[in-house]
Amino acid sequence: MSKYFIIIYKIIILSILTILPSVYASTNLVKTYESGENKIYKAQYNNDGTIFVNNTLEKIYLGKDCDSYAAKYGKGTWGQANGGIIIWFKDKEIVFPKQELNMLIKTNCPI
Image (cartoon, one colour):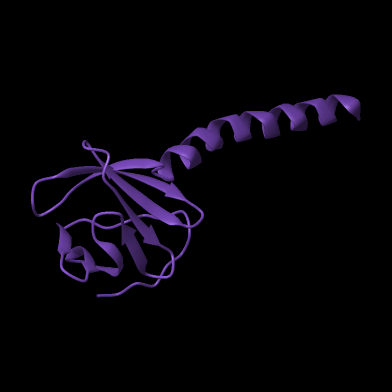
């Protein structure tokens, strides 16, 4: 009986070690996006949404409830569709054409 238990235990451990790296890689914890103004942002995903950070360390926060914030532009909203991501602020619109967010949490922020 214990011989079979050890075999089953090894199979389970081997399965976990095989599956876990692929699950971790598919979460896209950091991904690069390019805005319509040709600025490169790295996306950092967390439980509250996404933080875009560019090379000048400008941050844009995209919340899971379709809210956004940037120190430079203030509060705003955001949405996405097959055509890309749009972030709206009072005096500024930032677009990321042909790109979509893959957040860690489910959102419904249509354009």
